[in-house]
Amino acid sequence: MKKDLISIKDLSSQEINEVFSLTDKLKKSRDCPRRGLSLGFKNDFSKALKGKTLALIFQKPSNRTRVSFEVGMYQLGGNSIYLSPGEINLGVRESIKDAAKTLSRFIDAIVLRTFEHKDCLEMAKVSDAPVINGLSDFSHPCQALADLYTIKEKFSRPSGIPQKAGKSLKNITLAYVGDGNNVCNSLLFTCAKLGVNMNVGAPKGYEPEETVLKYSQELAGKNGASIKLFNNAFDAVSGADVIYTDVWVSMGQEEEANIRKEIFKDFQVNLDLVKSANKNALIMHCLPAHRGEEITDDVIDSKNSIVFDQAENRLHVEKAVLIKLLGS
Ligand code: CP
Ligand code: NVA
Image (cartoon, rainbow, N blue to C red; front, side, top):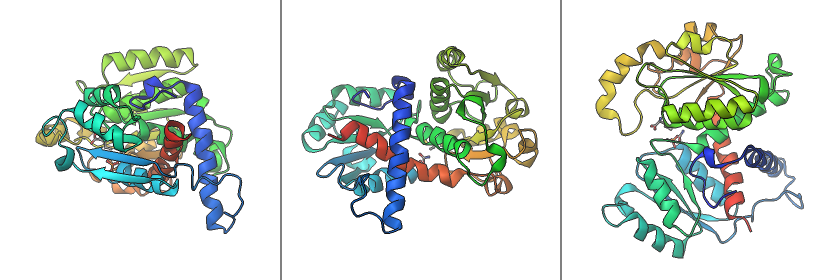
């Protein structure tokens, strides 16, 4: 893997699959101590990052990203330091370069949650320590890795969802319904790399960037999959095995809330929409969810909703990423 994880675009499909294989081991190693089998277990990762420290620079709020990285470092024997917007105040109190150069003398890796994607790129360029993008306005790579890992998990082992047996990542269709921004972009890159079919249903003017779409469509084609764009949610979910949505108003877009709620109202994931997908389609959401807006309670709380498995897998996948970037 490269020094940093800024975008899924920078990973090869082999590297993604290696992260997934390590994630499998990490998940199993956590199950064993719960069953009292930790002593002498060959996959004991509890000291994998002993003595290492992760800095978390967050310019936006977070539950999953912050907590999963902090808990992940703890479970791997390392330490973490959370730096809230007021503390580092990137670009205001000091430049990204000076902040990164200073932190590189203290810590072993940085997770950066920011607005502008170019800040992540700049931080990665000037930091000696690996930089992990913990969400920018353009991408959310850790989210997409956890999402595709979750889908793989659900489709590849007896999961209590018998109708899924026999399907693999290569022959499923993921329908993303909503805003074509950070989460959607990272899903597009990941699906394209892994050869997963993806439909995007987004209102006109809110589609993913042309360059992201074109790159993903070409790569998906080479990997035997197709990526299609629709301006209608029902068309997007037709034939879908998984329906995925995200908020209509992302962090930093609060002033556009009223207009966005109007524009996206036909893109709500509700029972009517779910009925248009394949039977028992799985329901995903990166969370936080704005219940009653992009998704209704009866869908997010339904038996086919895997949103909390998805959230839990953030922890396991990010531990794998940390070991890949930081492990000796
Ligand atoms: N999905 C996600 O990144 O959640 P947080 O914003 O709570 O970190
Ligand atoms: N698109 C959302 C994702 C939150 C995890 C946002 O950027 O706020």
